[in-house]
Amino acid sequence: MPGSVAADLAFRSSSSDRRGPRGKDGAVDLRPSRRAAVGAAIKAGESVGFGGASPVVLQDSNNVVVWLSPHDVVAKVGTWPHSAEVLGREVEVCAHLAAAGAPVAAPIGELRHETTLALPVSLWERLESVAGGHASDGELAGMLSEVHAALAGCTVELPSYLAAIEHTRTTLFDDERMQALPDGDLHLLRAAFDEWASRAHDWAVQRLPLHGEPHLGNVIVTATGPALIDFEAVSLGPTEWDLASMSPGVAKAFSRVDGDLLALLRLLNSARVATWCWGVADDPLMRAHGEHHLAVVRSMAK
Image 1 (cartoon, rainbow, N blue to C red):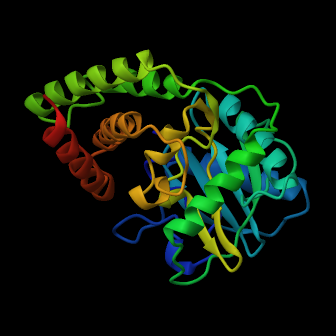
Image 2 (image 1 turned 30 degrees about the horizontal axis):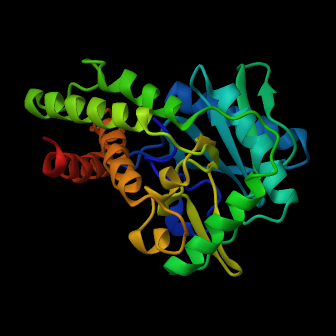
């Protein structure tokens, strides 16, 4: 599941963002996969001088994100077969952005590979969030514009944004992974997704470097303004794809926006998010997100 769907809280500092390694019943979560990932995070931190950490698991979805408390360092541990490629690209891109002064979290060194467990680990500076902080549409538009400007000078090879769409489709047409969704809704979602994805594929666009998923779950409001995190979906595509994850007020701040394309990509994004959320519908929060986006699809599907 992309980090965009379960908002990546990796770099936040508020105690309210700490999900911690405990389950709903309060028992310590010692699942082997999580335990291995936390161990890899600790070892990666120790390798660059951040020892004696008391790990706090912030996220456990497609990756395991661990705050190496009390250090201002967060580790992201890849647990999927393609994680090394995605996390490696994210580190390279964010190193360029941070050096260019863009509002992002900076990586600490290069992607590491914990040899014993064969897990890729990236380390990041933890951003300090403002309690109750809010960013206006204008501030969010400024943040995204700065990131886009810095990305324009990045030489890292990026995939097409359509690759993420195809990856989503693979999950959507996996009956086992989508078993939580009733047959009627599944048929509707698949039909709508294919229609909108086909139209997006055929739309002639200027392909520019994008964040890929700059929704509010990937924004941290710091004392100096909003900053973007989680660049796993960084890609080449139309500016409208980034704007499809943001409010209409943000889009209004951008010139030369194709309104018809933006409307299409907003629908496609809802179908994409619905897919990933229903794929993990045992999580109440993800199910709620899935129901919201499925309602959007229902309202607009033919």
